[in-house]
Image 1 (cartoon, rainbow, N blue to C red):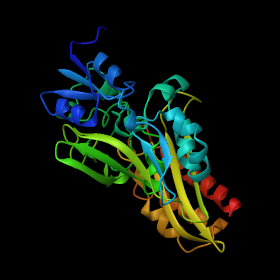
Image 2 (cartoon, one colour; image 1 turned 45 degrees about the horizontal axis):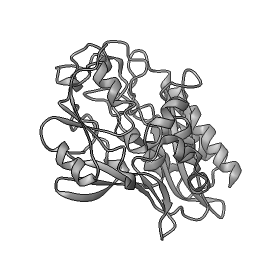
Image 3 (tube, rainbow, N blue to C red; image 1 turned 45 degrees about the vertical axis):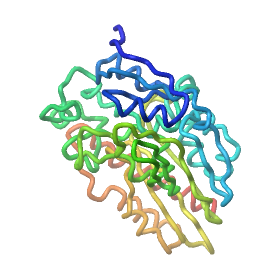
Length: 327
């Protein structure tokens, strides 16, 4: 398949990139691992590609004065996975980054791109005029839905494809966005667009908006963070179910907890149910079993993805048990 025709601009600054992105139909290009595939497969078209790959201020990982971390949006997934700073402060993010796709894609793909990528639904990527492409239905509902979501689907049943978003949400990270109206910072948790609000957008970004950096607050003392992903094959595959944990244990009890699922919802799915059960408690067997049961409360499986319920339950149980051992 040939790529369709489009103009190409290499922006020298964020301001220049924003200017190009707000004139006509344009798409931002960082690592390009998702964008070029989408264009080749005719998932969407564009008149112009605006490359930000040479804007050096958008790359790199640094410690902030408060003891948190700033990661430029152009930082590659490999750099995030291998960073000693990230591994020391936020092991869950390093784990999530190391679980993304394949080594080649991790070397090319960027953290900003990973947060803003398009879903992998085979109807969306295939030749179906589905809801997300402006059609009138989600073909997964009555079709091949074994990899689709069990939470928050209506009316489009994709799963969020990112392995870095769940750990970032659990760590309370935020993203800085530059656009035509200036810059703003929002929680990573509010970056993805739930299909119930708009099934045709993956993020809340407006045309011309660029994610420039990701900011992670300093980890509280005694924070244990982890990310676990279950998939069909070892590499390449997207999560069938996964969980990012950020749990602070003091005096044997859980003082703070954020639990975020991957592979089961159209957005990184925050489980307030699990958080409420473990908060203030010791992570003993009884609490862990209760929490795992709460993890799947309200899940709505479709015909072929019911296996995700015991899978998610098991992953939550195992990961909480691992945190309990450490604390």
